[in-house]
Length: 225
Image (cartoon, rainbow, N blue to C red; front, side, top):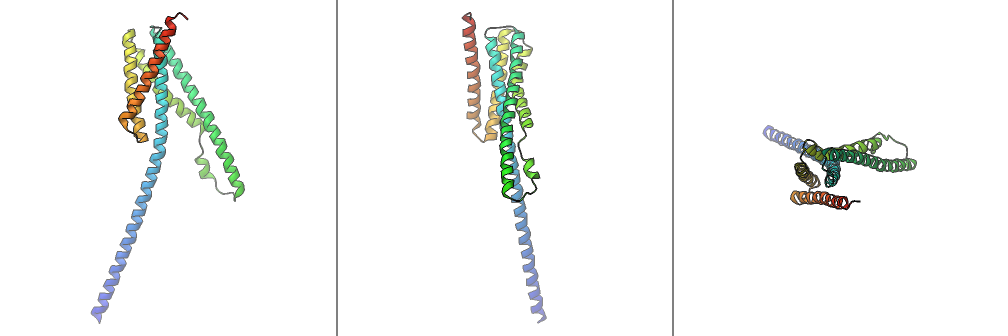
């Protein structure tokens, strides 16, 4: 009898231990799954922000380089070329910042109005979390201006210290080509697209913009208008 009772107690303890271990494993799996979801969510938000920054930098790169190539088609003076590029950088950064500020502020007004309508339909609660996730127009404007400036500074730096006209044009094209490939690759990685196709597409678009600007400016400048 004592042996049977001891055996039953051992079996109950074993079942209890197995049950506890199973519960702990389930809790650990649940925690791991939750952490993975949080990481994926954070990565998704981060990748969207980074992708927007890459696109802004690409805009600054292509527009400023095209302006410099256009003025370089009719003016060989390095000072004129650098001033044109700098004016393009400032004008583009301001345009991006103002446009983003107006756009995000409009979105903010819509979301605030929606929150007010929702609060009328339910008991007023703690809106601290909702306020934290509202868009920030000033931050969006600053980010857009910074991203544009980062891209625009590439052709400016490439042309700043080269006096010879042909070498300067070649240096700008080479620097812009490398930057376009890098931006295209980053955009592909963040957007989970084929890297080679994306880089080639961005590179071809940048070359086309510079070639069209250079060609048309050369044509108009040589016509004596």
